[in-house]
Length: 417
Image (tube, rainbow, N blue to C red; front, side, top):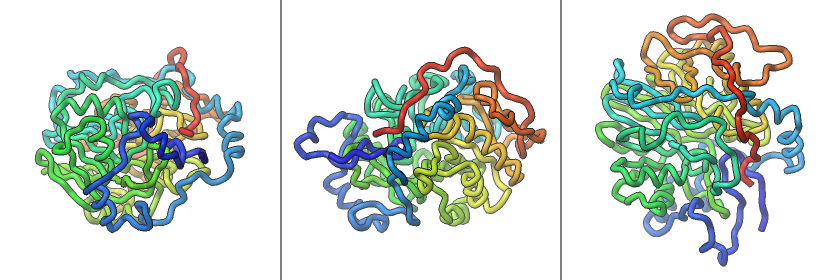
């Protein structure tokens, strides 16, 4: 059986003998079959036996495993990939969320790509991952660098759960099983519903969409939009489940969530059709030269944000997909610093909450302190000078953020192999 290193959150390997299929862990999910598989085969985005990206993308890592291991296990790099202390987390409570947002829109970044969006009286949970590891196994794989801001059971009712794709750091078995016992509806890309049904989500609570298809849930319109990535969580990884970004539009507000994606020109088309947005949530972490086509660096994320907004107008960018799991060779704090610098250069609004800190994207003030500096290894050249932030969140904030605590627990893990 051939085994390859996959980019962060990806499948464990590429093949599995049919005799072992009944033994595969429940976390691997289920393969699409029947009418679901026929619908996949009819998709305009499915060709030559797999879903296709909007523009070409290498989904297997470039270079050799030896080259990757040299970079990933280099001592100096390992030190900078881990927080030096306790990551500051806002202990979100029901009291924070009990009062409706004054503006009608509030976002709470729970870490990584998980965001609670309260929009026009409805509650949307995007890519919820409450598990301790983004892995099919409870004893191995990337472990959290900080706790979730509150227990999932304390979150309260959710109208719709949105999933961007089926990688472990976006689709988490323990979280889905907990939510399956509620009345929430799940909006997922085409094919992903097979996993959820396998885990106990009733078919009548699934809304399974191809790119540019929409569904209405509780007065919100949810649209699956293109992304440049890949799929797979089992051993065969046949690319039979779609990946997507998402637009969530209410009567008064609209937001965009990128899921995982490399940069591509289609952001402009999405913005022209669905924007501008009151906020964008953009992936800016877990990038590497080993997988340059399927994850964005901070400067690419800012470019995508500006494309989506049709320029420097519209609401702020919330950086996601960083700070919670160690999935790439770059320093732990680099995505935050990169976003800060990219926002300054572009004169764009950014929001930089610590995990669990609610904020209203249309409010006069936004969280903009570089909170990670207190728990990150200081670069040899020191932290860069930052411009004072204005009240709108344009530019960067001076200061060093929250103070460091003691110890950060288990940090190091190689991307799934």
